[in-house]
Amino acid sequence: MNRPKPYSSSPAVDPLLSNDNTTEQVSTQPMSWDQLRKEARQLENEIELKLASLAKAGANVSAQGSYPVDNSKMSQELEIEALLTKLQSVISAMTEFIERPSATPTTPSMIHLLDRHRDILYDTTKEFRKVKSQLKAARDKADLMNQVRDEIRSANAGNTDNADYYLTERNRVESSHRMTDTIIEQAYATRQDISRQGRTIHQVNTRVGGIIGRLPGINNIISRINTRRKRDTLIMAGVISSCIILITLYWLHI
Image (cartoon, rainbow, N blue to C red; front, side, top):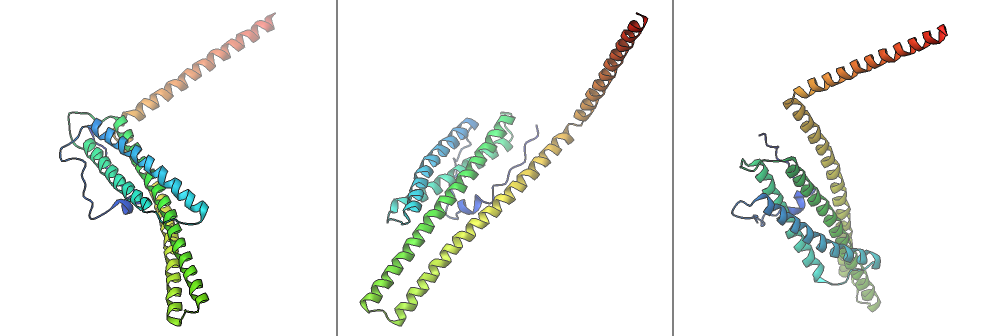
């Protein structure tokens, strides 16, 4: 039977998950479809729990306007990135399983499930990118505030000279640049989302056109059904018209 064409990964997911040092594979031996499905679901649950915890921490940071020194958030970010990379590997293995000739036939439910896992990976990565940007902005803001406090303390102590002043100003400019980079990154992510939606619509149109091209008899069947419906409509119209004429003649004779 015809196998579906491989899907390309979302451009909004690849830049985040690509890592030259990450070459993790799902397994050295081919896994069954059920094993891949269970592993993908388990990874999605783990990512959902960790991302919810990280998002809650990000919301608290945004509400408080400060970033406490806590290395656990950095550790959570690394764990989520590793899980997302592993989930992407599992989805790639599922794609290869569908495309690889095997005794197990490919069903529409398998393709739908694979598309569902891809959508979950894309949405989860997008949410992780958003939370990570919030935490990064909070860290940059905290660094900037610390630099301002140091500058004020130095000025009050009378120990500020020209070199320290220019160094502080440079640090402030660099912090502003980092915040600008964060905004630009979010704008690029939005543009990539729009591009992905356009490609998705194009793939759907291509798939529908391919199905119609592979099954030319569908058009003939639909044409025959429409012709039969029109014929039945004309017959019913003729019968109803005849009944009306007979009833009219009957009333006129009375």
